[in-house]
Amino acid sequence: MKLFKGKKKGVIHTMDITVDHIRAVFFPKDFYEKYKYLGSVPGNTEGPLFQALEPLVIFLDYKVRPSWCPRWVLRFLHLFGNDNSVVRVRNRRLHDIFNKITKGYGIWDYKTKWTDYDLRISIAGDEQCQNLADSIRSKYYRDGHRAELYQRIIDIDKETKLRPYSSLEDLKKEIDRLEEHQAV
Image 1 (cartoon, rainbow, N blue to C red):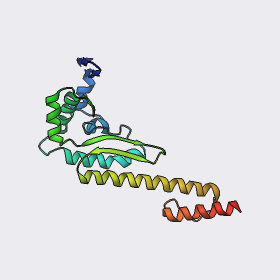
Image 2 (cartoon, rainbow, N blue to C red):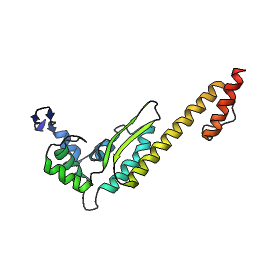
Image 3 (cartoon, rainbow, N blue to C red):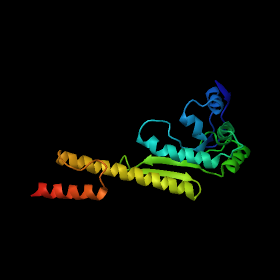
Image 4 (cartoon, one colour):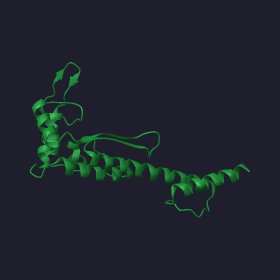
């Protein structure tokens, strides 16, 4: 049921606000609805991508939300000011209030590119937030690359003495040794 009809102005279209949108502001049912005011937040709470991004989302929530401001206020401002989007503006005044409270911090985008472990995170935040995002990205890449190398070793030599969490250098040396041995 539509409560507020969206508007059209040229190529800009705002969304229709429904009862479910209002319910999500006051009574969020999951992680995504609770923190979606931060921007691009993972909706699926299973898997390694969520496990990697969850600490960043919680840290951003800690940095963004002042102690005097309940989350529902930020969700409300995000819905009516930003149209639940990181790029649209529905109401300029509410958008400005939202940005003043949150200092403009948020998650613009996250995705894996080229391989399933090459995580890209785009955020707006201070140096601590950027450092955390960089650390998460680096660890996610390192762990994924390590798993890929270990799987290549297992495919060649099923009785290897290396373990899945051996150092990257050891795994690379072992692959080089095995591929050299296969070439001979």
